[in-house]
Amino acid sequence: MRKRFTLLLLAFLIFYFLPISAAMALCIDSPRANLRKGPGTHYEILWKVFRYMPFKKLASRGTWIRIQDVDGDIYWVHKKLTTEKFQCAVIKNNKTHLRTGPGTQYEQVSWSPVEKYFSMKVIAIKGNWVHTEDGVGDRAWVYRPLVWIH
Image (cartoon, rainbow, N blue to C red; front, side):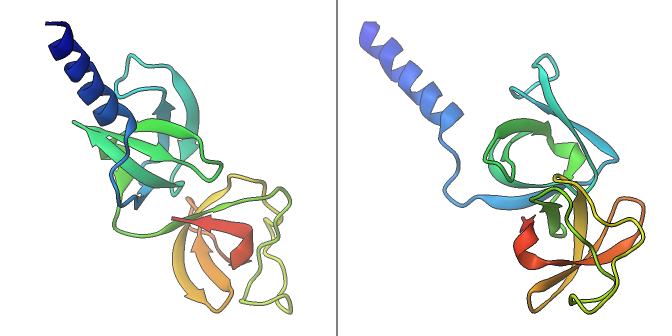
């Protein structure tokens, strides 16, 4: 009996903590999403994020997805709030400048600079520059090393 309990406990721990081998990218595709400590609405909300926040998909449990963010932190999010249909990017540093074209010779957009965790949908990548669109439809270019794309 004790051996069976130990095996069941081990199987549960492997299922719960071991991510699937090939992590996939996903984005928040809802105006807002609650990121939780565990797979259910009864778990604590750890962070509230906006549309186009990118994550690595680590595992699934029913309608819940275990995800990892730009900083390596792990959360759970409800599947219906996400999409895998396009790529998203998030700013890695405070005071990041966004531009009207793919290079420093282009002017900054009027709403630049932006803060860390500003999230955007990836429209195109041209060399070291990423063309993006934010949650309200504003477009800009950002230098690739300044964002985390997933």
